[in-house]
Amino acid sequence: MMLLNPKRLAILAVATFSVIWWLIGLRIGFNIWDEGFLWYGVRRVIAGEVPLRDFMSYDIGRYYFSAILMSVFQDDGIVSLRVCISIVQTFGVTLATYLVVKNSSRSHLADALLASGVFVCWMTVAGFKSYDTTALVMLIAGLAIPLEKPTPRRWLIAGVILGFTAMIGRNHGLYGSIAGAGALLCVYGLTRFREAFSSAVRLAAGAIIGYAPNIIMLVMVPGFANAFWDSVKSLADTGTNLTLPIPWPWSVLSGSVVTADVPGSVLLGTFFIAMPVFGIISLIYILSVRQRVSMRQLAVLTSCALLSIPYTHYAYVRADIAHLSYAVFPLLLGLLVFPAKGFFRFAIWGSVLASSLFLTVPNFPIYQAARQGTWKEITIDGSNLTVDESVADQVNLVQTLAADYACNERSVYVAPFWPGAYALLSRKAPVWEIYALFPRSVAFQEREIERIKAANSNLAILVDYPLDGRNELRFSNTHALIAKYIRENYKEVKSFKIPNYVEVFVREDFNETCRK
Image (cartoon, rainbow, N blue to C red; front, side):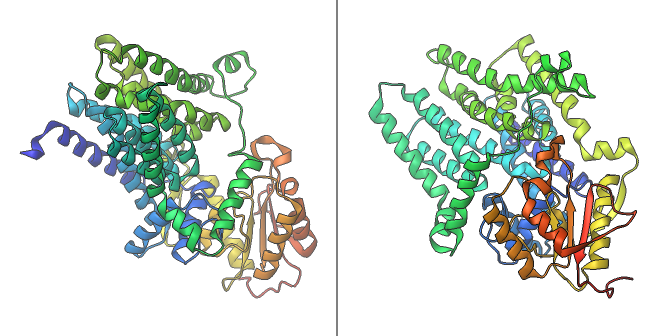
């Protein structure tokens, strides 16, 4: 009889739909930048290395989760990693959909499928970042637990979830803590200080429990604590990301922001406006009706409103659709649980679904492959993938250069944008910084040069073009000392097959034994 429960059937349908969708796209597309960054890190963890200490990385959570599953699969290839990501995506979509339908009095199946369609759309934009999206959904669910019924046990559980998400990304810990403080204020106000303090202690205690694996590594793993605090200092020095201007609708319409897709850019800019506006208006609404409406009905909406405001910072730092797709979930979920009725509910749901489809579908790899018709099948470490023509050229270039100039597993240095090259070649990077985006000090570059020397790297591939159209972000400017070392101690390889934005160098003492 339990299986006939409408809510359970709806959630089961959503999970099934999600699994089928991710399986369809399992072998379509490849991102040698960010996806390659994650794949390389997981492979190194499987090999026994430690994130942050032994190689540049995100926080530890996603690496160990993926490494454990891939070890069970006995496969560390890109498709195996995508299976791990698909599991995370399915959990995230299912949890988000559950939050929508759990208090709904309408048709659970219809609501669930429409809501999951919205969530799947946004998760497909940059699937390899679904750990972050799912962490945010977990924060929404976690904060809703004590907001619904503020007992000591529930504040502790919320804290555990907060600490766990911080292991996926420290930004989730920071933003979640800000929202947690807001939740305490919403529940207890400014007068019930003793209860608020007691709940804050439980929230913090739970966060310590959830973050315990990272704390244990800080204490027990040699060198990890230094690397961890260095990474915190680096974030303070360089910022969380390279910035991109926000495409405000009026800037797009006036021509201040140049774009080939004016309608899409205007809609994208509208989402950037909607995030903080939703948070502020929702909190005002909640405060105005909380005496008449059960907090059980408002808990998820309150959680979304509280999280939407700090996550606006994340979206605004690098204002493109990829980064919006991670941070937009409080807005999406909050709009779908907003207690509107009749025409207004139809308008909200219709607008969310239509705008999501309009913005996200053009970014689906499966859509791009079908529309362009020029995608190619390539083999990456034994896995067959269908990829964009430019990606195929990049992968083939890396594979060919390694076969010609770095045979017998010799070390290869690739900088700054293609960390996936190490993973697809099954090579250990000779340096710590596998994704060299930010300017580095002379001392840091000198250490990296010593690592290149120690690894006896035979081949160097420099992708020296202006990221975001900014010349100051060329590798030769952000890492001038390393670029100078390569150019003075290696000889350049000239070939019509090498794109003009790529420079290829081999050691001065290179012999011809690798050539076919």
